Length: 277
Length: 277
Image 1: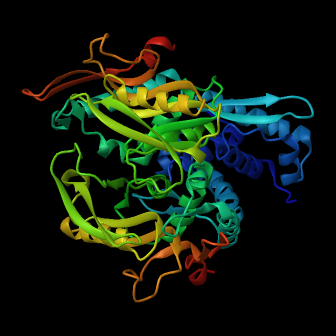
Image 2 (image 1 turned 180 degrees about the vertical axis):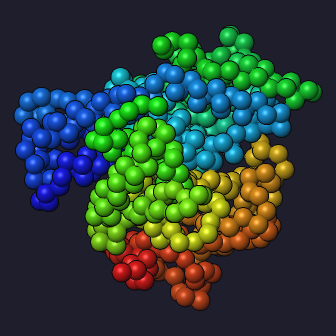
Image 3 (image 1 turned 135 degrees about the vertical axis):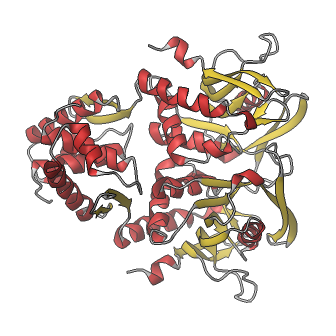
């Protein structure tokens, strides 16, 4: 198509790969795109792979054979993830973040796309090895995180609604118990939003006992769908283990203590950093 | 720090710039990062600039002087934007999308992060020249679009809530009229979510008469904030001009006709494509 020098080709291929994560790209696509020999393309990819890996940005997987090609899998290294989360924990410990009911004001941080994108990369790394068909969250605050994860894993995002006024045709509704008052709520999902037997990664911004996440798990059952994983940004560590409804999940941060009187908050890296290394 | 060959440096700089849109990066950052002379860095940037511009990916702006540096401004060309939107219009014309009240089912399309990211690039191009401090939307379906725009423009996103159960401290609430039944609703925004005198870009997925957007504009007044622009993905063209509350906005697509009986839908590129070239 167009003849490019190696230097220009490297810039072009880098942006092409970065904007198509978890997508298999045949070498012929590049060869035709740049009017270059496959051997030159392979050399270019080796250079890109080395930089991506040295930078801890992710893997460039090469699949040989007729159906082969190259696939960019964005990842964030343990060290970079930990340092990002430690910084986030410090911000979360600012005393004026305590809200009634043991919640934390996080909207300023979650309102920064650069921050949600980084969180998305960490969660995508945590679940990179699993077979997943879709990312699910319930409105509202988990939405940017779910999209950030879906964007990195190249997966669709399914939104569960909290109201009944859903104008999307027939829907399945379930009741769930959540919050410090154990009050009853309803969540619903449009029938056409999720194909049967999907493998679903549940993402949310905050989890206490896990009632809301458990609600989403119950909803999945109605769609004959499976839970492929549960990832939350912050879990509240102030929950008795017998009160906790959910035990298999990944958290990036743990709210270990909140003192409404002194406004003292303690936040530490979550269970994701216990298991990885 | 680390010595890199030009080829590796180009890959690294490309990803560095792509992940930091609308951010001024001093040349010394690159020079120190790669242990290279500023003159080499300038040559690298010239190569990257040429590829970005040839590909219609955006501008690489160089600012000279002590406070100078380089800034990547993602943009999508008129041709690529139009071809993307024409394809989206075709998908929107599928007959089973009609919902009660003249709405369109779009959740499958807006559930694809790759799609919302492209829409974000087009809207970021539409508003690239304006002075903006924040992107605002009202929950729920506009959220992924607002984040996609915010991500491209490197701006924070402010979420207006539709309920009263907001657990974020003191909030400002207003009433607004929207929908085919002209019913009264409430929206609210936490006091701490938006600094006074902010210049705000309002983004939403769908607009009929404009009652919801008008509600956000009224809310901005309560914060002494200004409207820097209004961008909607789809506007309904089936509104009398005297019924329309809002005249200054950018739409990417227009729903020109819906026939609930025949299930015939017509969608055309929006007003953004009338003015640009």
